[in-house]
Length: 239
Image (tube, rainbow, N blue to C red):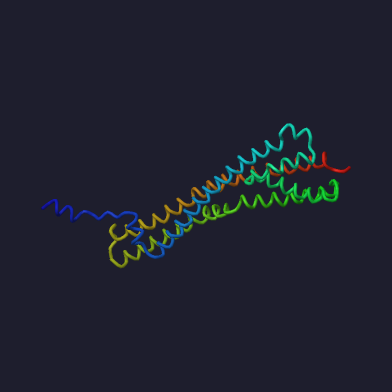
């Protein structure tokens, strides 16, 4: 008899899922937004990490191809043609893409003769356009990480405030301040806060990491474009 009494008087345990299902529509909407932001951030982090690894590996391979000792001693049209023919397998490399952009411009100029100093300016603009396009491609969707990092905690805070407000309304309606009245609202509020932090923390860490990696890639691409122009000036120009 005592066991039955204790079981009946024992407080009901609320799981996080029960709190979510029983939350107010506003809090549920907040949680849905945060879940979407978290899933998108995880997808972007995974996809961008894979892309940057491919970029690093292929750029390293293309630079090894470009600066091979034999070609470095004999920079001429034949060497450029050979590099261009093999550059297609480095499609993920921004450096290879910049090289192909410069090569296409050189090929266009070569139809009228060897490039002159004035023509090099056209090559330089082609390299700059390709470099900027590759930078924009690498930065694609990274801004979503920054948006999540800056807004997710505040969205979670809004859900928290709304849940606490519902708790106070429940206190007024029940004329009681017991834990059984205020606990569900406060618990669902804390879930919104936790989910907001869960979305923001990896987002801000990944954003800082990717920005640094992209800056390194862009610097390497700019250095290659400068070296490429120097080769054109020294070996392929008509003085």
